[in-house]
Image (cartoon, rainbow, N blue to C red; front, side, top):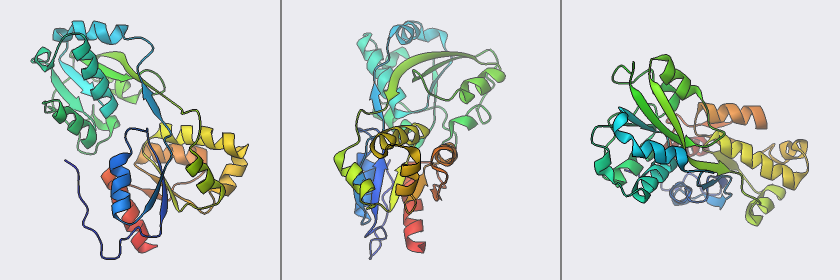
Amino acid sequence: MSNHFPLSPHLPLEGKTILVTRSSGQSSEFSHNLTAHGATVISMPSLEIFPPSSWESLDQAIASLADFDWLILTSSNGVDYFFTRLTAQGKNISALPGIKIAVVGEKTAQSLHKRGLCPDFVPSNFVADSLAASFPESLQGKKVLFPRVESGGRDILVQELTAVGAVVVEVAAYQSGCPQTMPESAQLALQNRNLDVITFASSKTVHFFCQLADQVFADHSNLSHVLEKVCIASIGPQTSKTCRDLLGRVNIEAEEYTLDGLTKALIKWAINS
């Protein structure tokens, strides 16, 4: 369920222009929340989501779902592609009666709820890295299915699950990549220094933003100059680390690692700045 923020009488983000970097299909609710608080939002999709290069490993896993003890889903994309493929194989949620489901993040849980399912476990701080440490039962000898991005994802979760005795089967459920071009509105806002904040909701959006920006501004030193007065806002620690590595800094980090948490952090920053 989405959080709805009480509107301040003076709209705390009024007069702020915010560049939102998200995948093209996932930014609307976040952008709406920012706009509702007075911000001018410019969309710059920095991530494209598409099917994996092959469905073979996912199809094999779906054919043998009864062999698994847990299904772990760490993103809405993982939920959507897994269940779309489940349907394509002529199955539905009745194929999951003996499998417990763990998800990371409120939005992932919401995506699961829309499918008529409730997760059996959601870590309290919405971070995949904490999943194994806080798991509600021993995973020794348990078989775990992990549908995930085909390439470029972090491996820490699999390493930690394996370390506590789980047998983890990773399958490619979707792929992510960098868009071909930067929208003209975003390019003009950067070139004209007409931005107050850039938001990042994943490490990949930081990487792909830099790729697209480097195409426009010729080299990274030019980009650093363009961004010198722009506030860099991150959804959480891992994204912040990537911002520091590639952009040199982070000015805002959400206390709760969700888009609602990032909205709250932006409002707090605006009120105090």
